[in-house]
Image 1 (cartoon, each protein chain N blue to C red):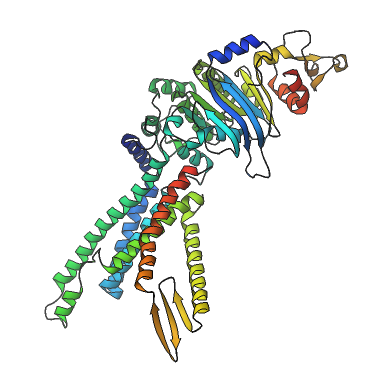
Image 2: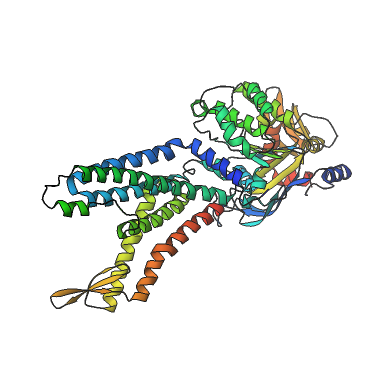
Length: 298
Length: 262
């Protein structure tokens, strides 16, 4: 609970009290080889009721973290508890409360009706009406065999199915890869619409713009380290995102890049000014100035 | 919720898997039966009933080993592997489904083999002319293949060993498991043969050859004599091949499935 009392202590304390801790990662050490570790002593405690965005560079270990959470990989050291279960045991009680949508999805040579008949029975809260409405929203209602659909269509089908399973936890790995622009918009709308206080949605992506206006909390990992795990409200409070004419006027610039109308900057918010969070700039600031970011959010 | 076994969940898993892989499961079963039929008819014509029965029986059991190598063939792609491992069914149910399908194949094959064997044998016996030379001898020699015969017993032992190896091998080798496991088996067999021979030669310089792990041929002057294991040792070896090794392989498949990271 690294952000306890960090911004508004009481608010966060109340938040943690009222929201069940659903993912509890303690001192996670993981690597595909013990000599080359991806994560070393990672701690992450996430309550339900939020949409989390996990950001990281290619190869930073985002998918690996998700696979540890679902029990496809086991930590070398440390522990992971998800919804009260140890994921590595892959017990049916655990797996029926979590749905994982990987970057590459698998669909067998079945029609939608047959797929639902065969797979939905494993998820007690699966809702057929919701499923049909999600398919309609994502424009994926078809009688064709699933393996004959395009990759994007297959992915939209799996997203609709995963949402309709109504699992408490939904893990999505690069969900917008392969989706066209209207589908990305629909995806964001759907994700926002299915969210409730008992649910957790965890989205891992390197396409940070796809998470704009969608996530409640941002998690940034780099070089096997957790750089940031903060609600967007805290980010807005502590950092300033803006476009300025001269960057020299600002101290503690965490990130800057040339923009059309000046220089886009990310700085420490010393004046309490409101600004619109730019996730891409936030990510760049966090990865380029990890120490400063950590100090700001300490 | 029972996290080890639930009959309904197991049924769902079985149904899902059969619909999901109809070609691999039903297709391979039908193909195997067709090959057995053709093999039987061909070998009967060119080499007689005994060879036809043994050859086609072994072919059918080999088909079972191929089935065993495809029941867990979910790991050739990441997405398929994730889908299988994260499906809310227990590792025991997922293991049992592999055993069940392999067993089901064996049952179907045995039924099918008995049917074709009976048809071929009865057709032959009905059409053999009583005036034919050695009629009585031929009539008594050509019989239905017995599943409790020595040949059948040895074949079953091989099947249980190889099918177990295929089940566990398909959980280690994500791609083309049948070929890779077959190569590993060949490698192990060759290694066992060489090691056994070297040990035999080391212990008995006059050893001519040795068959793992039951007998040694030794040179005595110009003759070669066969030296069998004593009864108690032979019993242990047979027990190992008949029960212990297959049981270990089949149980290891469960442990591997339970522990598999992907």
